[in-house]
Each structure stands twice: as C-alpha cells, then as structure tokens.
Length: 411
Image 1 (cartoon, one colour):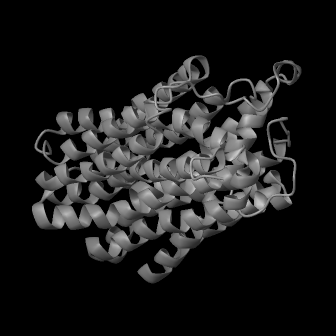
Image 2 (image 1 turned 180 degrees about the vertical axis):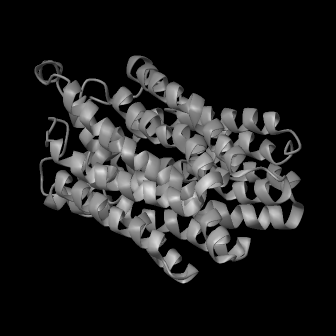
C-alpha cells in the first residue's frame, strides 16, 4: 500500500502528536527548572517559588476538565496546537518579566492554561490513532516524560548563557514541533475527533459511565499528583539545602526524574497490557513509596540521585494504565476523563505546592519528602479499592510492541 495508507497516516500522526507532547510538557518541566534561578537570582522565597508552581496549575486545574468537556462535545482537534503555543509563550516571557513577581505569576498561569488546553484534545486524538491500548497510550505519554526530562538542561543552558531574560529562546520547541504537527495533520487539524468511533452507538449506550469508580481513581491520582509536583518542585532545592551542592549538580536529579519516568511509562504500558492494569498500578505506588523514603534517609547527594531515578520509574509505571482505566470508567466521556486524569488530578499537586513551600520554609525541604512518602503509601492503599473494567473499544487481542499494536489497531 502507498505511504498515504490509513496505517501509515495513523503511525505518522501518532509520532507527530507524541513530539508535540514532548514540547508541551517541556514547559511543565521548565517551570520546575526555573525555580532555583528565581530563588538565587531574583531572591524569591521557597513559598514564593511554590506560588509560581501554583500559577502553572491553579487555573489549569479548573480549565482542563472544561476543555475535556468541550472536546467531548465539539471534538476540537486544533486545541492541542493552540494550547502548545500558549504554553510556550508563557514560559518564554517568565524570565523576561522576572523583576515583577505578579507578572511572572500571570505569564506562567497563561502557560498552565495552554497545557490544560493541549492535554484533553491530544489524548483523545492519541486514543483514536492508537486503538485505545495501554501500550499505544504509553508511547504517546512518554513524549511528555521526554519533554520534562530535557527541560532542566535547556533551562540551565539558556539561563546560564543569557540570564533569566534569555527565557524567550524557550519558545523554540513549541514553534518548531507545532509546525511539524501542523504539516503532518493539516488535512485533519480542524476536523472533529471521534473518540468512540470503534464502538457502535447501541454498544455505547449499553456501557454506562461508572462515576463512583472514576472518583476512587481520582482520589488515587490525587496522591500521585502531589508526589509528582512535590518532587519536581523540591528535589533540586532539597539537594542544595541538605548537601550544599551546586545548582548544576542538583539539576541532575531533576533531569533524571522525568527521564526515568519515560522508562517507567513505556514499561508500565507494556506490562499493563500483559499482566493487568491494577497489578501494575499497585506495584508502581509501592515502589514509589519506598523510593521516597530512601530520599528522606539518603546519606549523600549520590543516593538522592539514584533514589530519585527509581522514584521516577516507579511513579510512572501506572501512568498509561491510569489513563486507559479512566477511559474505561467513563467510556461515553473520553474527553472529560482525559481532562480530569491529566488535568485536575495533576494540578492538585500544584494547588498544594504553596503549602509544601511553607512547610519547607519552616521545617526544611526534607519534611516535604516525608509528606510525599506518606501520600504514596496512601495511594498504594487506595489502589485496592479500584476495579478493572474493559470497554468494547479497547483492544482485546494479545498486545504486542506499541508500534505493532498501532498497526494492528488501524491496519
């Protein structure tokens, strides 16, 4: 078949979409990477920089489910591109206006709204292109991990060379990868996503939304969110405060955290398709709790780096499984499920971040990681309330490699 076959288009479309996910979540990572520079160069307090994390997530926490609802109703595929560009513009401006904390808060909030607009639309399209399997969803999700992992190095390079005012260069990933996505998907960019196209209308009507199960999943994800945002926000500051290492050395753990998360995301999707989503979710939370305890008890910065890498891997093992599980709980509201799973729950960590910042100012950053460990133990316990559910649109055949899954789902 020619290169314009549906199979080839879907494969190319998923890879292009994954690239935009890397660019979009690059700006989430950039917020965390910029925080030490705001502390050292703009003399912000821990509570103040935690407030910047809040700026990135406060409006996003409310907006993302709204964008999910709009995606279900109108299938706004173009919103992923618009959100990506807004996310990039906000972060690009943040260092330029660093002399004004209020201005930084506003532009970072705009970036957060852009991230909120991106995720539901992009996740719906990824589900459509990948057939709804955990493996294909992990392939899309890992783009976000890669973007977050690259952010610290890029921020250090840019800020080190040009100062905070050089943050304008950080808009480049959004522009370049947004353009690539637009070129690949321009014929379908303004078409409606059809998240349930593989499910007949009569079958959809026979599968009701399980809101109770979805709320339990949301509670589990709330513990994940606070642990993720808390680690992203404070891991570099923890190494600097406790072991007096340089900003560059402290950023190693910050870079390894999402990089290890990429490994965990890919492995988790593969394992969930083979051994069951709930088993992988529970395993991930248990290992993550142990890793957080190791960070608290670490005798050296090297142990912190190693424990952070293990934490990133284990914390992201359940990631793709949690997304597809949310879709199975709300099969008639895929956009809403995506918006809450990737938005509201992830943003809860940002909402709690100023409180964690106050704890760090008063009791030290080490206390923050004690809280993270306790929350992960709670998440592990709550995961036993969850139940498995399969929607008719999920692939029932024996899963394979994500690339092969994609061919099978769309070939």
